[in-house]
Image 1 (cartoon, rainbow, N blue to C red):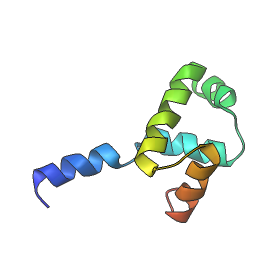
Image 2: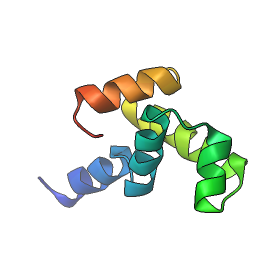
Image 3: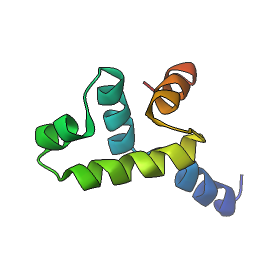
Length: 74
């Protein structure tokens, strides 16, 4: 794979933080609860999920969790 392939892979691969958020969502935590746990704003958590949905091709939170489980990301 050339360097362009590596760049694309990094852009479409979820970050560790996004995967952590997805794991917490799969445990039933809300955006607000995740934000409180991490000491961040709720909007920041929403931004993590918006980016994650694009990377996974998910339609919503439940779909993202299902895809994360199916792809063994969480």
